[in-house]
Image 1 (spheres, helix red, strand yellow):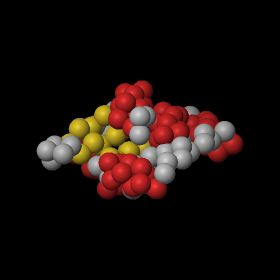
Image 2: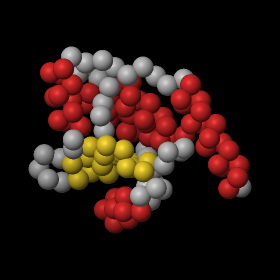
Image 3: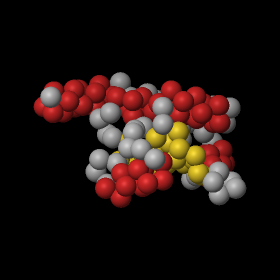
Length: 122
């Protein structure tokens, strides 16, 4: 089963590379504003997870620079996801609110909807 998962993961990554969406272009001032807003976001993910690929593609289409934290390669991110988020499930978007609170959003469709609502008009 592990070999099948590995092979499928490589196929997903290859297809994502070949059919990668175009990155949205923003003027310099707008990109600086978006980068400042994205500083409060972090995406916890596995590189070859199809749902994580789906979210990364949406991030690219929106032209956002969100920190990517690979929980499989970095144990500290895995521990952080478990201790602060409550479960090891990816993709997960960590949203630091202005009041200092932190929200953890786990479903890929919810994450994409949130990003589109927050940044699509940008």
